[in-house]
Length: 74
Image (tube, rainbow, N blue to C red):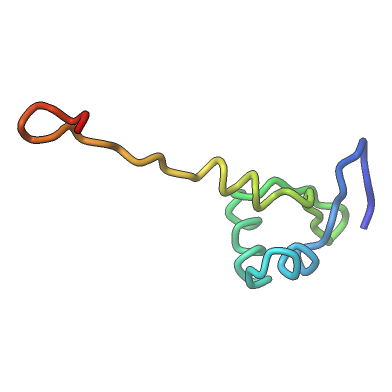
């Protein structure tokens, strides 16, 4: 682990342990450039909040349709 300006950088394995996600899933998201990361030599490091950023970016807001009778504020 290392820190840079208050951001903790962790390995994909450490992030997988913290989130409960499979390490393979984390690495796949890195390979597809969906998670913020940095490569140093042959190793990858991610900010400890990379998954939270990903979820916030990918979150789909629900669409509320008006009532078929034209109301919608029942």
